[in-house]
Amino acid sequence: MTDGKIIYEITMHGRGGQGAITAALLLCEIAYADGYKDVLSIPKIGAERRGAPIKAFSKLSPKNAIKNYSATEDADITIIFDPTLLPLPGVADAIKHGTVLLNTNKDLDLNIFPKDCKIYTVPVTDIALELNLLASGYPILNIPLLGALTKVKYKDEQGERTLGLNLDTIKKIALKKFGSKGELNYQAAVMAAEQVKELR
Amino acid sequence: MVKPKFMEGPLKGNFASAYAAMDADVDVITAYPITPQTTVVEKLSELVGEEEFTERQHVEYVRMESEHSVGAGLVGASYAGARTFTATAGQGLLYMTEMVHWMTGARLPPVVAIQTRGITGPGWNIWADYGDILSLRDSGIMIQFIASHQEIYDSILQGFNITEHPDVFLPLFPAYGGFVLSHTAKPVKRIPWEEAQKFVRPKTPEWPHVWVDGERPIMSNALIMPQNFYTEFRIKIHEAQMNAIPVIKDTMAEFEKTFGRGYGNGLVVPYKCDDAEVLLLGYGGNALQAEDAVDKAREQGYKAGALRLRTYRPFPKEDLLHYIKKIPYVAVMERALAFGSPTGGAVSTDIMAICQRDPKARNAHIVPFIGGLGGRDVFLDEQIDQIKILYELKEKGEVPDRKYKMWDTFWTGLITGDKKVEVENQEYFGDI
Image (cartoon, rainbow over all chains, first blue to last red; front, side, top):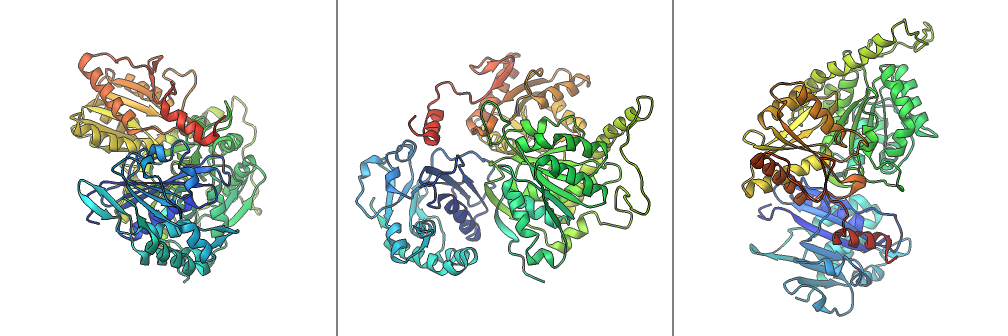
């Protein structure tokens, strides 16, 4: 990795059962396979409840060792699994800078985010339902969102760039981890990468 | 040879424990689940049946009905000469306590991984807090504080070389923060089986450390009258602790030579101490984070160093004094509360004691900090503030005041209408 940023901090907001904690771990595995020096995934564990808001964090370091186990307070990239989370305390109002990636098929009021934030949306629930990518009847969102993340850009004083993650790596890891469902996960990731929209 | 499912990549701390136990060629694992340890024994129950392992080793995995029985199982299996492993945390460790004392009293060498967690009261808590393992401070076990995922794996692999050393024969409890390390994932490299076996103490014919043989019955651990050898046996446990200091150092040196990575001398891990004027001393994940705080503070002109206490029992007196004599302004940060003790912290009290016995360290300034109890995040800014407090002390000659200073100890990160904590509470409990 030649990226000069010390650590990318990514926060995932999801609801229990949507796969945000797994997404944080998968993102670390993909980034490590794509050449990041150190990665750390942090699940914020409370009382486990399906449907309740939960948070998970990934820290990706291109060059240096990660020594800080604290949760991220000011994320560089915020991934939101469900638009109904936006008004809850600690979700949209906790975003101070960076990039936002939101799962929705609807329009979005951009004024709820700080002015210099880059905003992306992608309808991964629709994609998962279309492909019949389900777990216990629920659409699988995490691999598709990570597919979309490969196209998402981050901007700072060093300029605008993606995280340098590859769909091929997602494919490799999905096949290894999800066996027979790996291929379908990968297809959803590709579709999400095609359908992700840059709003700002 | 079956290809291993995992050799390198981001791995949860608890899975690192499980793989390390298998790679250290354990014979018996006794198990009972407790948060945040559960995934260690779950993973082990998978691994003992996986082809990679079944084709080369046989591990007896015994499900028990409680942690007390888990401890008793380790004692029994160790007596029979088996290499034994388990993991537990918090209340589970408390329930196992009686058997922990048996392990040291009978001089048995299990390795027990601890995912430290808050002890019950007030209310349940399952997050990182070293109060559980430190409650066994005086039981004769060796205690190590682990700060990273790779270090979990490496420490357990080294563990049996220390516990089964003829000069030692005491159990080792490597402890790491529940959820902070147990459920987070970071890159871990496993050591291939053949290389690991060259390092791990071999099971030679004389290896069974206690000779239990049906053909040659013996009686062990009988009643000892006061006029017999009880005192002498107890002193031998203390002697074994002292003997463990060079053994831990040698084991770490050999590990580093063989595999190219290490953690200080096995006892303490210094960071930028050569030119430091003040010192952050701590243990576990927070002490690793202190290295980041040191880097940040140095950008602001504060020449700080960090010293991570890796082995707490035996207490590395000489190594700590070496640094404290050079850098006499020391903040001791602890994630555990020893109620009613002189400073509130077990480690800071010990450090003050060793300074008192050394004329050259007697005037060192030891400033106790306690925070992060029950898993509360310890933020970098709080650690940088500790460095600033030490500088104020260095310049003005007395410990400065802060809102959070009580009974001469600093209590970092307290809730005092702090908005950050309010938001977190809303997240966990909703609008109540």
